[in-house]
Image 1 (cartoon, rainbow, N blue to C red):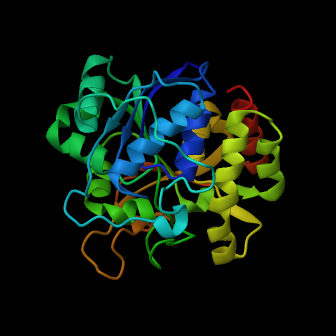
Image 2 (image 1 turned 90 degrees about the vertical axis):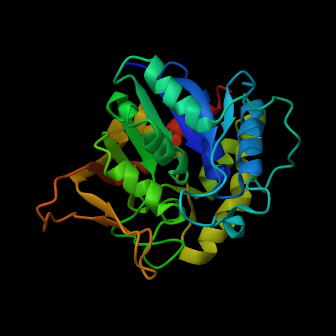
Image 3 (image 1 turned 45 degrees about the horizontal axis):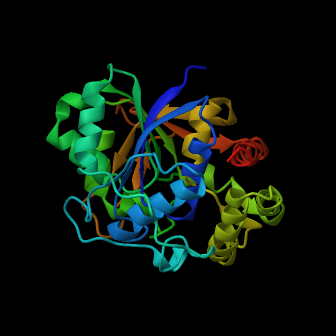
Length: 313
């Protein structure tokens, strides 16, 4: 399979950090052009700090990291420290990263990258709220046709919501940005809770990371020791869902996932269901499909890939 040129748009978050590590451990599959950070799990000042910490853990301080939007397009910011801890990467002992932020705004980097590279050669891998992507599409609509694919972690159908009864966190934080992306016409693949809740970081899977006996494996295990406690208590599962690495795993091994091409609309008006991804799974409307909406994952294959690639770093 041809190497994918990607921009990771992210709000780290322990699971975001795991996704970045998977990308950095897969140079034969992934050409990471840069990391663009957005406010989400924690405020922007922490998300770009956490992205740089993650790059340093992997020994990759050369990766450009950009700060982006610090609030959603049209709403106040909602964060998730109750899940990720006050730093966003609670678990391991953290430090002040030495690698600097790259000059410039994340939205401008996204626009410039899509204009500079040949059409259909840059994928946007989105792990957080879609504010940066929505802002870029709104500012420079000419770039939309140049996007190879938007592969996002966000939304839900059968699993409904994890931040409200109806909405998944990333879409809930900035539903207006999500609406822009889903209505853009760009090719979209969605990793919703329906998939990520089947990719559980169980104790044996976390211990496999720790057993790598490298800095990355220890860092990953310590993050997930903290991260999983919230979802185990919430869902009564054997481990916490590892959401964001599903995006990168799909880019490396798409055969690990299965889904259906459906229409997805985002609710932006209702206080009760704001941020809900209304997926026409049973095709009961005449709305044209606009996204590949995944609902199955080979969890053992997913964790084998993740462990193998972290072992390289």
